[in-house]
Amino acid sequence: MHATRIKGLTIAAVGVLFITPDALLVKITSVDPVVFLFWRGLLLALSFLMINSCRYGAGLLDEMKRCGWKGWFCALAFAVSTLGFVVGMKNTAAGNVLVILNTAPVIAALIAWVVWREVLPLRTWVIIGVCVAGATIMAWGEWGRGEPLGMIMAVTAATALAANLNVARSHPDADMSVMLMFGALVLAAIAAGFGGAQLPSARDSFFIGLLCLVFLPVAATLIQIGPRYIPAAEVSMMLLLETVIGAFLVWLVLGEVPTTLSLIGGVIVFSALLAHGWIEVSRFRKARLNG
Image (cartoon, rainbow, N blue to C red):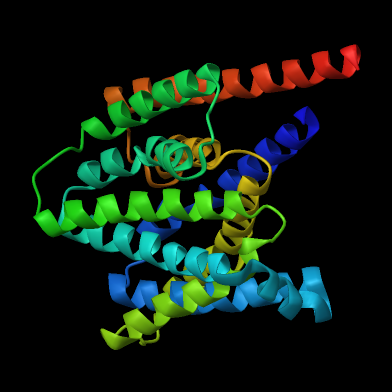
């Protein structure tokens, strides 16, 4: 049991580390959002196909069948969460979107309790509460007014993310990551419908390719696998680490100095997740000694 949890936490943590350059590489590019979304979806679909073909070979189709309708749900939820994030960012203040997205661990925990009666231990609820508070403090400085559509899409993104990870958690015998390519194709199709099928400049193509052929496919695959071993709420909680490291990378490379609130919130989130990891490793070592 403890070994499984450590495995799940490790997989999710590595996945989060791979996704941290997302904000930096998005900021570096200068393409229209719909063009970026088109290439993000198309290249991710190609990357997912290559990764899963290497992992499963001729057995890939059988693994897809094993996912059943839940696999299609996860694929659609992946597309909805990504689309909701992009549209939300475009129609309201970034802080509004980030504060709402930070509630994803709580939404995930509530869905797990209401639908599958999965109850988290008190220590996990405490860590989730501290992380959500810290991440909200980080985003509070950018809180502002915006269109209701942006707020609605941010709520949609957070809910879709939480639902995706929960459904994956409910069917641990199947690898839902093999279905993500279909969600990515949905993204590309929607963006193409709005005129996104345009060729970026050579410079932007390089950064989009780096993000969507290297970082994001590995990150999304590992994060999607995480709920097979740990609750969806914990995977969502660890995603908050992206906010901290992502902001640090933007500061380091682009010189965008974070606000005092961002620094305080970042320290809170990082410390809470570090404490969570230390507690789980300590429990694992104790269980091995007693076993």
